[in-house]
Image (cartoon, rainbow, N blue to C red; front, side, top):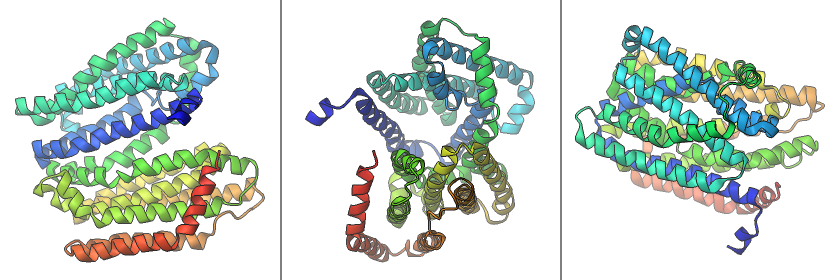
Length: 476
């Protein structure tokens, strides 16, 4: 506590922003067992398909303004920060109004294509607008290190939404609509007031310079943001279309559980990024490879432990109707490893501003994912989607590794930072081990032995791990 009190406000804010993010995601995970028991697999699938469409439409309708241009604009327009914020909020709101008019004109065919209703779509628009309003406000708080307000509002909202949703589900027959109304009503009530705060700060909803800047910056990034959303959401949509909502529900649970590990790996990636950037800037490549190998080994070991207990985890999070989800978790969880690996290589692209290649990689992965799903889900059922996800993320990591090699060749004097053989052997061994673990699901003792072997390896390699931790702590 004494150390915490003496920390600068920037450090305190960083700590609380991480805690806030973990609490927000943690509450969502904790409430999953409740909703899987209140909703049938079909209802759970319909709800998750609704969320999938919502994430895709958000990228199109508001051009991903809160995530792309806004953080950069707050720095670029530092002297006019309030005006920039209110004008960007005005642009986002205007775009939402335009798309709402377009929807009302073509709502018949749109509803038929999406298998939805007008009330559901109206709730979707409310969720997109209110979530974006919150993200504008939250980013402004982060830039100003106002962590107290952000933590209080985020945690209270994260608690209120599931409570209201549970009450509504228990009160109405249409459980999907009840849950959607619970989310949209709570967000509109709480986040809507944030829009007034943003407007009062700058008192200007339109600025030609700000609108032009926002549009010029984010339009080229639209393929990247849209492809990201398609890559993470298209599986559930296509499963519902090609099979049924119940299959989409089982797959949604396995996907959500499989990607729990990404909460931790994302935090590690965020922490290691600045250290890696500094190493690249100083042309000091010593330690980059060792750190990468240790981190990849650690992430692989942690995910393998998670995979070993997939049947028990599914049993905790959902009733017996979802038991098949345990066999979908391994390929999905292994995908998290390749997402983490891609981030290590992508740091080179971000540092040398090769962002166009990132968009190309994401677009290719999204297209391949849709094509593979269309082919294999129809032949082998919804389980195939978990393997197409893994295949696409492997391709994604390989694509970025080759881009990194090109950067090392053209920008860093052809320096060899990573040993390809080590990365391939580690990744292949982990992938095979993770998939073979499924064969031991009926045998709990066998899985316990695998867990003990992983822990023994960690004990024998403790000196290497300790050195990596010491180096990691020195990263700043």
